Length: 74
Image: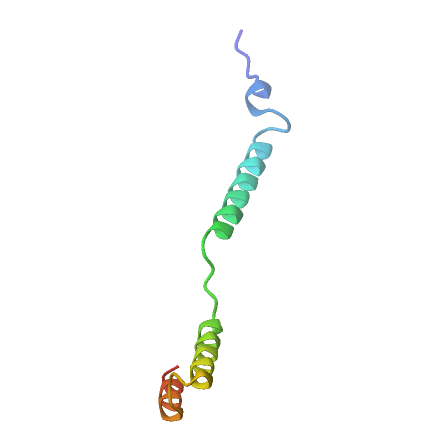
């Protein structure tokens, strides 16, 4: 009269496969979101700033004194 048939609700292997699929999709979503967000580069800003200062010094935009002052702040 009363039947407990969870086969149709749980699919292949019961609830564990559903959990595995959910975890899989969450991991994929995290990877996609992580790649879409901009990455902050450490130390590259300081290196770029010094390169800009060197170019400005070489082109004559700033003097050697200004170069030394600005380099201390970077």
